Length: 259
Image (cartoon, one colour):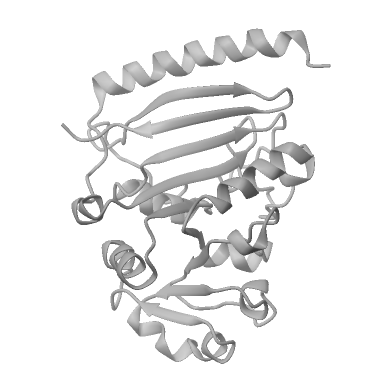
């Protein structure tokens, strides 16, 4: 039976978030527009599960804890989302720590292209993404070419997008032109999320808030990185849906385009 207080809490949170969105809209500029990608029609949605205090992993950096307390129907929803996109994107650190499969467990035939963003190409040889038979590409920078052997021997593809820093506009262009990718599910971690949010590549967010608190000064959060130094740079999102799922709240946001 659903706790009757959850509905009240949901309405309170919705009012708070709605007010916060309105305040941010008044004070801050919208996120920078990634014009090339927008012209291509690419859509990137950040999907994440996080604790009440905004953490996406334990202090040990292990990220599987939140999945362990999700209900079966909530896990099915996550995999259904994977089945509706062309590609799923994570950072190399996520692969190293969580060793995910990133497939659609509900229907493996509808699994998206896996895209790993890693500047170092330091991927364990035992990683599921290297040992299974599903397509996976690794986006990196030119100066990491000498580390590509492990990935290429596993029959996976390495994409070079910039020499010293990863060019995300180029990566998105390659994904669309070479792999017909028009929609991306971004699953973190926090550093990759920062790169895409700060450059204006995130169009929507779906955030699942679980009823736990992780704490920790250095615990990974939804968006890490350098952070914004001015409200003029802070990206803007509009809350358009809130779903009460008993033990979890699902929040859905859309980016507010630049005027």
